[in-house]
Length: 57
Image 1 (cartoon, rainbow, N blue to C red):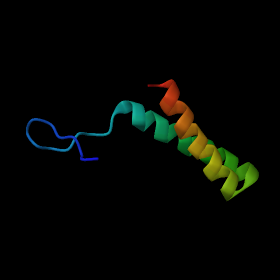
Image 2 (image 1 turned 90 degrees about the vertical axis):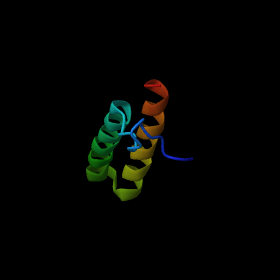
Image 3 (image 1 turned 90 degrees about the horizontal axis):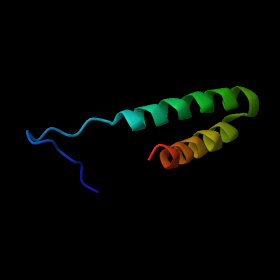
C-alpha cells in the first residue's frame, strides 16, 4: 500500500485518530504489563488497537 502524499509531495501526517488509538493502546499495555506480564500486555494493546479502530471509524 503506497504512502499517500499531499499536493506538494510530502507524506501525509499521522491522523489524530491513530495518535489517539496508539496512545490509548500504550497506556493499556503499560497497565496490563504491571499486572499480568509482557504477553498479556501485548495482547491487551493489540486488542485495544483493533477495538478502538472499529469504534472510532
